[in-house]
Image (cartoon, rainbow, N blue to C red; front, side, top):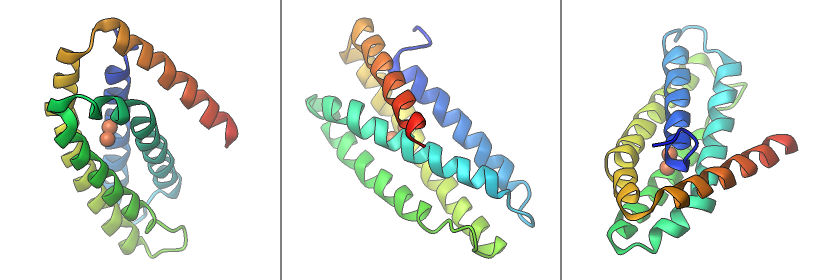
Length: 147
Ligand SMILES: [Fe+2]
Ligand SMILES: [Fe+2]
């Protein structure tokens, strides 16, 4: 599978955010606010991209529809936790929420990479995935330019 198909790009982002969280949690006494901010913005953009470009299309596939409705719920849970990451929070609080975010992200990534993505790779051809990958990169560039 080519590296720039959408599902591979999303998997790459999963890895990046997981390692950021690991790095933050490795120093619980002094939470790295910059990395926390990075987790926040990358997860916001990642979920936005999936909800705009991937889930609506995947939802139309009968076999994927249940996975997608779970996925929306899991995104919402993570988004609610992200709101709790405030710069002026106590280190303990920040770490507590980062741990919960890590659990939520790990669980969700497991479902996407273990169930949803393999299913979509079976249902959609290479061109479709490649095309979605291009759209994803365009959307990402636009969104990043806005900030
Ligand atoms: Fe994802
Ligand atoms: Fe997701």
